[in-house]
Image (tube, rainbow, N blue to C red):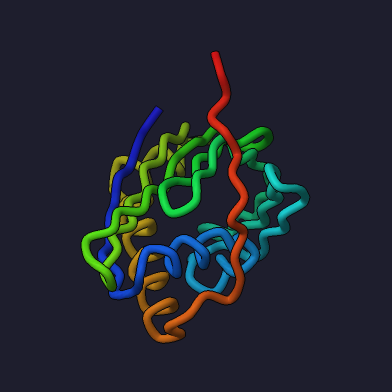
Length: 153
């Protein structure tokens, strides 16, 4: 299992940043290789990606969602991955977004790409495109303020 952690500071209030992040179907606007995301329920998303010429589909379950704090997920099909995005208020109009992901590279190509830091650079690029997206808009395209409580062991 490999992991990546990346952060970006966004010059927008935390509520706006969080609200935009909950609009999963907008991810293709700033996430490289993400073709489509459909939110099928409050807890489930279906992803279509094309990375390195390889198309994949998988489902991911939101395992925890706390407004203005965090969104955590784990895959339920396809490649084994999980992660959390946290939101930190630095001041009234500045928010730090941190992504932490754990993933299991699938096959030789992904293993080599992992060793070369491809996913780290991709996540960093996606966060910077998100920053540009929300800062240029200045407002969120939608919001879901519901909570998904952390599962109890």
